[in-house]
Amino acid sequence: MFYIHYSHKSVLLNEAIQSLNIKATGMYIDGTFGSGGHSKLILSQLNKRGRLLAIDKDLLAVKIGKHIAEQDDRFTIIHSSFSKMINHVKNIGLIGSVDGILLDLGISTFQINDCSRGFSFMQDGLLDMRMDISSGISAAEWLSKASQENITWVLKNFGEERFAKNIAKILVSKRRYTPIIRSIVLSKLICDAIPHRNMNKHPATKSFLAIRMFINNELEEIMQVLKDALIILSPRGRLVVISFNSLEDRLVKYFIREHSCALSIPPKLPLTNNQIFSKYKNKCQLKNIGKLTPSKQEIKRNIRARSAILRCAEKLAI
Image (tube, rainbow, N blue to C red; front, side, top):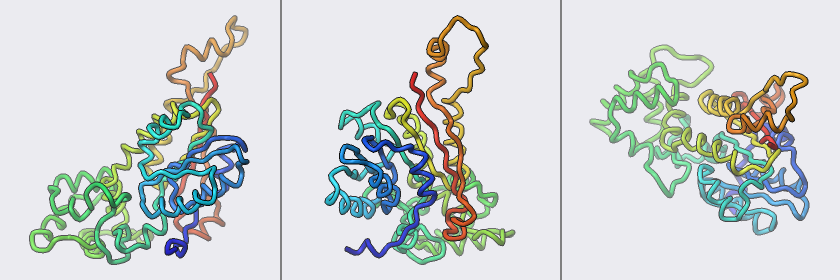
């Protein structure tokens, strides 16, 4: 099968699985299957009673997952967005019974290297950028219709691009004569619009990230799955999220902070801990386990790991 030629290194692989605190008989969800690196390691730690449900929007990732599912009946993969995870968990009757959820918010190597997807600003290909090519509009289609103000807003708010206005102006001017339908063309136009360049980062990095996140509705989907995780997880179930940019990490960080509490309980109160925590049950639903980043050795082996941040939280048993 053609997909076996794609090579992808899962970032923070061992750290993510350790953070899940896997029970051999547990039920786990890999919300971003990708090429299956995390799922395979989870499966290696489950016994015959353990189960793993994987979800991915990418049809190629689902094809890879189905090959695993054919050989391992503990494993199931669904073509869907992780923002719809709660619906799939309801369908199998496991709301409140999932022992761990893993989300790797990075883009897979096979997606970047596939020129036809348009994710890379270093390769020429059709400007698509959809994670799920079976639905939604492509980046090229959006760029052909979006106003200059809308493009500016997307680049500024999703990519934190300081030259967003300059870039949008050039894109709108260019498309009057020639449609922007190829990734290398978009990359060159962005480079031409940026007067001051960071020597350590390609000028198109932030804009490509911004357009991809907007096209795929990534931030809203992350917010939805984080909210639903509180319902899906069992008491003491773990939520592990690996993010690769500041916007994603900020969402995860503040979500965990918002739903965690480190109460300072005065001594000798005639109340049990359960009685005290019950007063804050809407606020105190998670325990913040902590944050991890890749080692220098991992970054040396895989430069794409350099921006990764792993955050872990555990659902309180209240």
